[in-house]
Length: 397
Ligand SMILES: Nc1ncnc2c1ncn2[C@@H]1O[C@H](COP(=O)(O)OP(=O)(O)OP(=O)(O)O)[C@@H](O)[C@H]1O
Ligand SMILES: [Mg+2]
Image 1 (cartoon, rainbow, N blue to C red):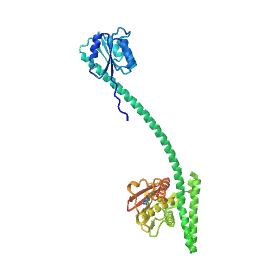
Image 2 (cartoon, rainbow, N blue to C red):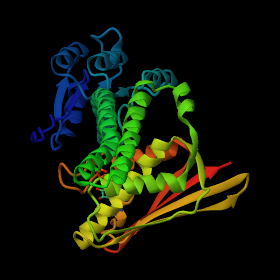
Image 3 (cartoon, protein in one colour):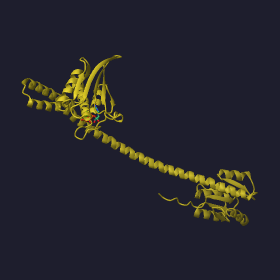
Image 4 (tube, rainbow, N blue to C red):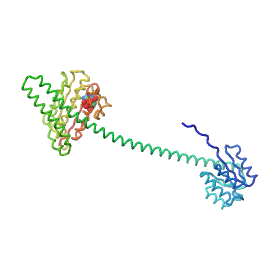
């Protein structure tokens, strides 16, 4: 921070060819905080002004040595110090002088001999004030344009940062996609692994055959995801849309989570979804939705009760609506719950409260993206410490 510099003393240039009047005028200002430059001629005044500038010029109108007289001296003062003020003293109050003085923007004029000498002093100080104001104004304008320039610079920097952020966001988007693909594939892969392990310990050939059939099913899901991702286009979208039986898709999803080894013994997963609830979608995407919701619910009850306790309940139904119906599904648990201030962010990518390696924070984001694609909604209700419920609504025509 720089200390305030003392302001230079204002300069008053007084010009009169009559020594008595000049002395009298100069004596008025000896007590003021003003530098008084008393000049006997226009020529001298011009020289002094050229050397050191002028703030207020108090000049006789008639200056024998100066062709243009006092008014010309005013012009010079303005050229030297643009906001200089001037007061002109004239021997006879002619209208012509007054008009010309005003045209020049002269602050005031005084008729000689002045009736009240202190009136001259007052006028000079008023002229200083006006000049001071003009100077403050100029400084304000200058400061303002400097600030403006700073702001413009800041704006440019901000624009550059914004562009960088957009770029970073795009890159993050690519990362999200890659991580999302891995996540989508990891769920059916869980199923395959669980079943393969089960086959190793299974002697019943009927069950082994059942597990093998399921493995083929999950492998098909993985293949579908890969095919779907590689041929990501509108036509492909339409090819894969089918009428999905929700009860079946939910059952499959619950089985998948159970087989993944995540659901420890003692955790109840109850499904009460009536048959014949249909949505027009892709089967594997609907499964993806419920795998994630049930997996989260199981993880939440285990977080609250420890291994082997807690209940996850999936219910569903259908209510009529203008022009069709709304199919709803509710996935609720009596787990750890979600604090109110976190309920809005749980759908954001990478938001997770799970330890590193256990959660990517992509599950609910994938759920949300899939549902949005089908014009469906998801909402959450939760009492922290008591559980959470996710309510899904699918519009059907
Ligand atoms: N049923 C639930 N009960 C309590 N908290 C939940 C529940 N479902 C989600 N959450 C909270 O939302 C966060 C985000 O969930 P999300 O499924 O997106 O990611 P994740 O489960 O942490 O990781 P990922 O699903 O990628 O393995 C969770 O970490 C958890 O804090
Ligand atoms: Mg999850």
